[in-house]
Image (cartoon, rainbow, N blue to C red):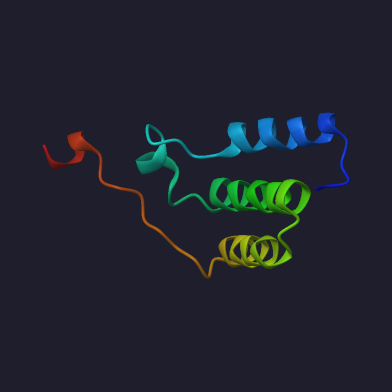
Length: 84
């Protein structure tokens, strides 16, 4: 059971939903460190507020820091038109 007001939980979930890279944008955004980091920070916030899972919260935050520092790198997928 968490200690947070339902409005806070709902806002965290909405933020996570907006920041999550969906399957349509994955190939375009998977190499962008700001997008990847924001997605992970949002996931960490949800883990902390909803699940009270400190271990996963820390893991998400540590991965986010790696993205921001440029340690984690994922090149964007080539576009379909680039091979023409």
